[in-house]
Length: 66
Image (cartoon, rainbow, N blue to C red; front, top):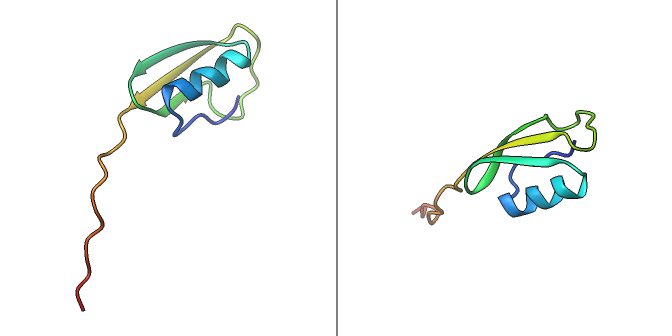
């Protein structure tokens, strides 16, 4: 099983489908948890459960004044 952490739902599902697996997705955004874990041996038609969360909002870096 590949490591899907950080991928968007679309990217992760695309990888899962190409491996012949079925996807179960909870949430939206980017993969924060997966089952089976990365590196696990998988078989065709296994189910991969993904938990997604929205990416944190991007804030400008703090400016450092001398």
